[in-house]
Image 1: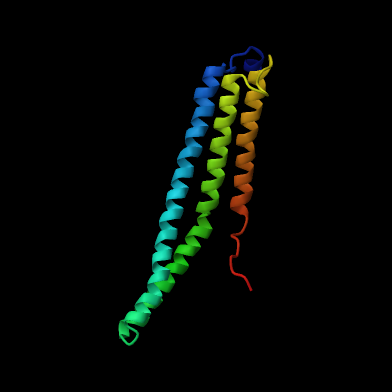
Image 2: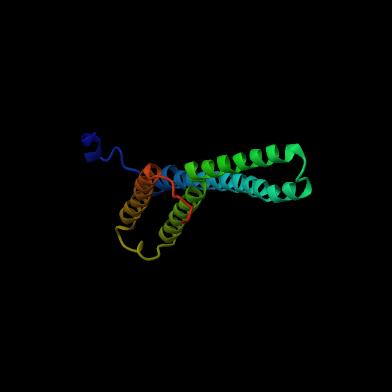
Length: 156
């Protein structure tokens, strides 16, 4: 492999790097951000509807025997939805992926327009180092974030 690097066989030009690496990463982060946002909003929406249904059901039919069962089921559903949202970190992933996607786009446009810091003879090298650093940082952040325990939103 080092021999290939020394002879330039593995070198990518600007167009190859932007289309094969950067645009692919932007598309990946964009897709993952949209999916996480969609799941977060769906699950949170169901959670809100279930939670707001409890007082309505309790007020409409307080003496009906099924009321207690329905309220218990809704309470259990709320707990499951809350756990799924926390466990899968949909909101956090949505925001983190969106931030990374937009940062990659921003760097791409700075590079393509030759704006600071990409106005030197070493612009492409600096660009690749910056992009790879962002991707590597996001991967490291994601890895440590996934390993961290979910936040406890309950206050004493």
